[in-house]
Length: 144
Image 1 (cartoon, rainbow, N blue to C red):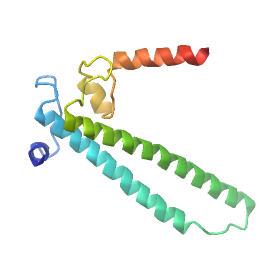
Image 2 (image 1 turned 120 degrees about the vertical axis):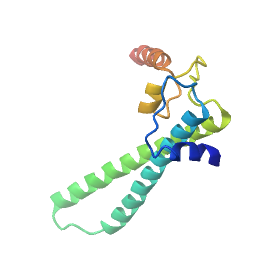
Image 3 (image 1 turned 180 degrees about the vertical axis):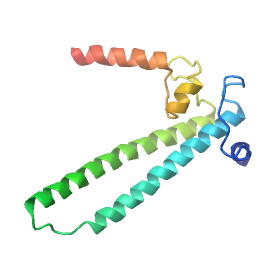
Image 4 (image 1 turned 60 degrees about the horizontal axis):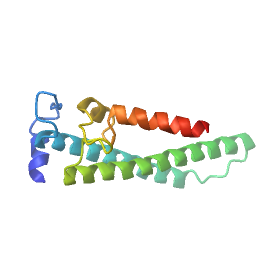
């Protein structure tokens, strides 16, 4: 898929998908693939930094308040990394959809998700309308 990578790199990062071109054209797919891969790389880089920080912070705080604060910070960092681990899974799913040709299309309706939504949330699998229906059903069942 080197051809896809070169489509985006030729534009020096200035390319933005538009409604004036065919939906999920090779150029758009390359753009979203690069966006997803860059996002994944950033998350992995941050998580490596977390591992280094956690190893470095094994010091024993004599003050109870300092120790509690340090433990709280660690717990928050670990929760953040867990959310990012789940996000990496969603990114990988989106990359698979790019490869199989289903990226950008709603899982419920098969209609295009829309460039604005994909730009804001590149891992989206539902159109705005389908997502709203899903959330309404979820609220109704949660209230039961």
